[in-house]
Amino acid sequence: AARFHTGWERAWRSPQPKKKYDVIIVGAGGHGLATAFYLGKNFGITNVAIIEKGWLGGGNTGRNTTIIRSNYLQDPSAALYEKARSLYETMSQDLNYNVMFSPRGVIMLAQTEHEVRGYKRTAHANMLQGVETRFIGPEEVKKLVPIISLEGPRYPVLGGLYQARGGTGRHDAVAWGYARACSDMGMDIIQQCEVTGVRSSGGKVTGVDTTKGAIDCDKLGLVVAGNSGALANMAGFRLPMESVALQALVSEPIKPCMDVVVMANTVHGYMSQSDKGEMVIGGGTDGFNNYTQRGSFHHIEETVRALVETFPMVSRLKMLRQWGGIVDVTGDRSPVIGKTPLGNCFINAGWGTGGFKAIPGGGWATAELIAKGEPGPLSAEFGMERFIEGRFIDESVAAGVAH
Ligand code: FAD
Ligand code: PYC
Image 1 (cartoon, helix red, strand yellow):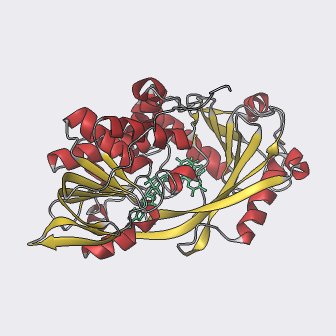
Image 2 (spheres, protein in one colour):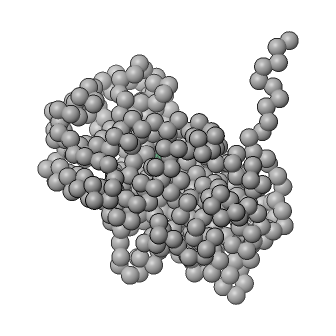
Image 3 (cartoon, protein in one colour):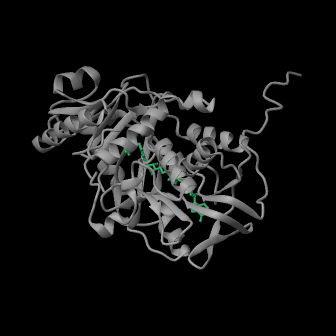
């Protein structure tokens, strides 16, 4: 009998936890895995465990709509997101894993005069930051997106902020590629293992309690997105973050009809087409805090209404499935990569609705922070002390998703 598809090696090992590690990372999402990867690759630190309560990539990393762009307004953000975007360009080669990075272009539509001014300002800022974007008029939008309706019953399309080297990537593959590389470096990825407590003594972390027993460490990284508040609570401090649901849906697969990503932030909907042909759709966050990975019904209606007016053909599409993730939102819509009140405990969180695009850059910066004990140039501005100092990195417009 044919013996196809047998004898495949597992992509990563599933070891039992050791008693102690140099570094424990809590959360095997994209940011946790990328942090571990760059700890090994850039600093030679490989006695590392990545502890995951579910399955790796099963949090927001496997639930997002995979938009990658770096068209942010403020200098620290543009540097961080552009570092990430540029790492996506070579990620498949670097990890020897096809993450299907597809720089097909991203347009953020301007549908009010205010948005036109705002996006022109961002295009100018991006030019100074070395991020390639430009403001395009409605005719060019129509040329790039023939299925769009420029008139719109409520808001006409007045132009858009276009990043030609933005696009999408295969979210699961990003997690799987980093996981395999971490495992190959000798790191332990421990799935189905929930961290239930953070042990400390004299202002320093000594280890974590988990559903597989206590594990000691010299340094701890908390990289748990929507569960960041819960983990901080275990460690004895509070975060300036809220957890809310963000949901997405996909249609039945149809023939290729749109080869750029379009975000329509005034009407609150965005859409791209997957390689399978499904239209990948999302909108704004729920207006209340919660931890259920579902999302509320009224957002589906609002999102679909926005897309029907932007792309009338959507009205004839059947939707296949819908899901939600819990995103960790800060007041200035920028992440936190920084120290915590516990000396050897570090945090990467607060990516909110936009951290998939940031995974390689966030991991790079967090690894540097953990290895050196101090933030490097990429994360210097992103410590949570900025909320005490009133030094916000306001990206509420660039976030693109209504909160
Ligand atoms: P996660 O992938 O959520 O990983 C955190 C991990 O920590 C989880 O696997 C979780 O199980 C684990 N964990 C939590 N608590 C514990 C514990 N106690 N013990 C052990 N493990 C624990 N971003 C973009 O850039 N572009 C997009 O198009 C985009 N679209 C999105 C659409 C949706 C519907 C959603 C929900 C998000 C979207 N995002 C997008 C945001 C993006 O998904 C996140 O910012 C990013 O994935 C965060 O990665 P992470 O590794 O920090 O978190
Ligand atoms: O950050 O670009 C983004 C995004 C789009 C949809 C959700 N997040």
